[in-house]
Length: 435
Ligand code: EPZ
Image 1 (cartoon, rainbow, N blue to C red):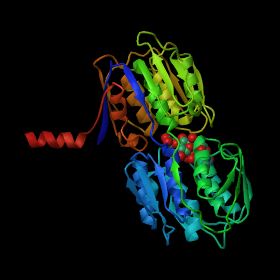
Image 2 (cartoon, rainbow, N blue to C red):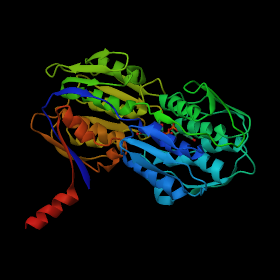
Image 3 (tube, rainbow, N blue to C red):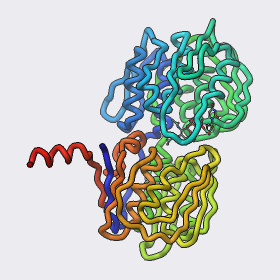
Image 4 (cartoon, helix red, strand yellow):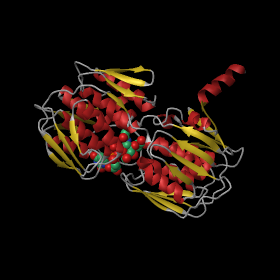
């Protein structure tokens, strides 16, 4: 089993550039199925979800190859509409293949997508939008099966809530449909504007992406071209490095606009960190001897609100802060499964449904804890930066973390943390050999 181990006490110093955003790269790789020419995505991190996407592309008849840190996709002549169960279940991002497979193969068969268990994650909005475009839902229980008869057609569709995934699905479906699609109540996350920028560079005609009303003029069945695209930086990884301020010191995040994580930086500032914002970089400074301020009531919401993916990171910052805090997640019912790990480290932390309660002023100590999901796991690693000098936190099941960070332990180590990644199986194996 993979783990990450952190020993507390080291202040962090240095600068770091986030890799390309996971939540852009995943829909972009699916979008390349709509392209008749090769596409290059720049500086893509080798995340587990990226590897799953590459396996999935290959399974449906397409493919991509690494050229250094770039990924170059090869257009496919023939596409199968079937996503293998293991790949669908390995990540939520498998849902992004519904629309491209339906467009290319005329049918799509997607066993239910996996991903972090953050509570119910239905895909009814994806399906309602695709149905409005003329798709037929043949099955939707254990495995979603869609078919189309003729080219999908443009429609005027209001999303019942601003789902990121559904906005992306419907944008992808509309690119090669016949006529104009208008999406109302669309999600506004930066990854949606980034996906639209990629599609437009490939010849799509999308306006308004990043606002609640998105208009897409379809090609009427023609495929798109290819392009070279520099993916948006990962704002959640950037927030993770910023939250490393728990350890004290000064961290500069480069090549990343502070606007993309403004709500999180405002939170850090409100907690007593010094935040210096430039045009395309920002620095967080924290004096190790000054207590952070708790007593906060945070609400995670859709962009530009405090991102749900940063809510566990904010919690890690608040564990030792002075005063009790509460964080409410408006998007997911089970965002704070990491509360158990926080408590094992000595924090007064408990989650009740969507709400996380933090007593504050915790004197954290070392322990072995388990990553419940991707961001909860990253938050436990961050909490480890705040334990007393010499104490050690071991986060088990760190495979979750590698779904979204290529090398979180290495990133933090380069900033000065005493942090490393390992595998329990390997160590046990080595010990057996010695004996
Ligand atoms: C994306 O998930 C991200 N995942 C998540 O990142 C992120 O937390 C989330 O957006 C919100 O920003 C990927 O991009 C792969 P939603 P997604 O559809 O698309 C409900 C991470 O750690 N809903 O905006 O699944 C849903 O249940 C991950 O990187 C429906 O009811 O999020 C949830 O309560 C975790 N019906 C809310 O909407 C639907 O058809 C928001 O979900 C779709 C969604």
